[in-house]
Image 1 (cartoon, rainbow, N blue to C red):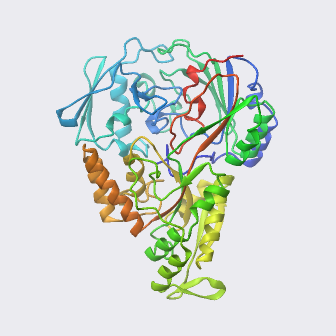
Image 2: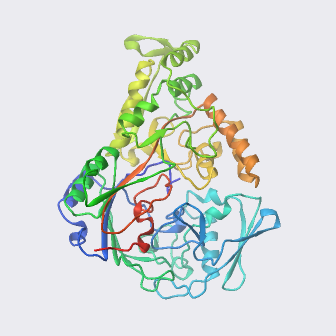
Image 3: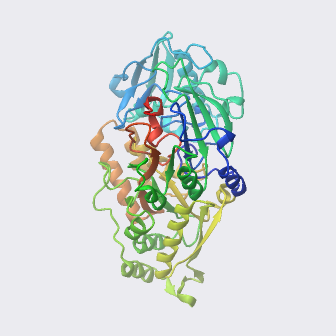
Amino acid sequence: MRGRSIRGTGIAAVTVAVAVVATACSTPGGGDSGGGDADSAVVGIAYEPESLSPLLGFGKDGNSKVFDGLLTHDAEMNLRPALAVELPEVSDGGLTYTYRLREGVKFSDGEPFTAADVVFTYRTILDPKTNNASKGELDALKTVTAQGDDTVVFRLKYPYAPFAERTVLPIAPEHVAGRQDVNNGPFTTKPVGTGPYELVTWSKGEKLSFRANPEYWGGAPKVKNFTMAVIKDDDVRATRLRSGDLDGAILPPNLAETFAEDEDRKTHTAKTFDYRVVTLPTGNPVAGDVAVRRALDLAVDRRAMVDSILNGAGKEAYGPVPTDSEWFTEGTERTHDLAAAEKILDDAGWKPGDGGVRVKDGVRAAFPLWYPSGDKLRQDHALAYASDAKKAGIEIKVQAGTWEVIEPRMSKDAVLAGGGSPADPDFDQYTLLKSTLAGDGFNNMAWYDNPVVDEALDDARRSGDKAERGAAYDTVQRELVKNPGYTFLTHIDHLYVTEDRFGPLTTQVEPHDHGLAAGPWWNVEDWQPTK
């Protein structure tokens, strides 16, 4: 799940703090300053992608700016045509999806877009040699073929209800990406697409600069120059916004609140499926103990986290599915109950020892919890979690590190992670919980292994009946109560502050990834600057 993954949001892993501070003292790129030109916009984001190639996972949930998918989402997250002229024709009992393509579309290099590019994109992603950690989301796809230049037919192995959601995936040009190494070629940093913007420069750790595609099939954007300044530090991002260096930024709740009385700026709250979670790796003798997992699930005070860490901008999380989703299983909420947590540990033989830390068979109830360096929100969650655990007699040592430090430790050490996708429950739960994906990059980081969950995930994925799928996901959520391989903490609202010169702006229900493809600039190509 590297693209939209449990791994992280606000992390530019290769960006050192010195570089962030240095760029904070200047405009991004030495000339892209905000608050000025009506046809330009500069926004502050917290992270940058590892690649700009959709073949490697970039933009697979939509809004990639440089690319288009066959379909896209509107403000209400309903599917709408993009490179396809209409929603797909579904036949053969849900096994065949036929897309008619828009005519006259060109890539930004002037070459025509055809059905061959769609076939190339999907076949390349599914190629075992392609390093796309999300290819499992296309497991149902059997074949993809072109019928002339304007029709594409997908045939599935089994009815897969959310397949159309997977066709928001951006389409890459075969004449460019097909002539180079898919994993390391120049297309990964210098993309060519059909989207509303073209990439001008990508200064890693600093900015991504785009210019409007004047030949865009949807009409040339009014915002001609669009820059995303990569600013890892929340405080620096807020300072640059306040100084007029940025036209908008994503901010944590405490900093967004400082702009509440600013008449020249607006705060936008985006509801999300974005959660923060502690992985409890099966390979750890303490975190892998079911009694410890169940006790931590009750010892944690989620409400306090929402109130104190998120300033109320979010809600308690009991699994990957938010409590206000139609897919949430009522009755799986876990109330904060320290006494019950202590009883679970007592009954399982975890007895209080020196310093109040419990011991069982000579093993102290202690393990490390890592969070990505510089991520204040995760740090706050990790410290609160450790504090709650200590009251139950479990010692958790909170440590910060880069992903290069954390990743090799994930099979044994806990991690304060994140994830979430609003499109379909399969996209979250399968990669998060499927036992066969344990150790596959950032999929199933806890090495969770539950045969009942595995079967339910397969049943839900292979059914075209919504009621059957709902019953399967009910099973998954109830199993997470019995054996929670993760401690889910909060679902987080995303807060953005923007200049008031771009007219009314909207947000979508957002996934874990935010700032780059989401935010009020999810449809920047439609903005109508007022001054």
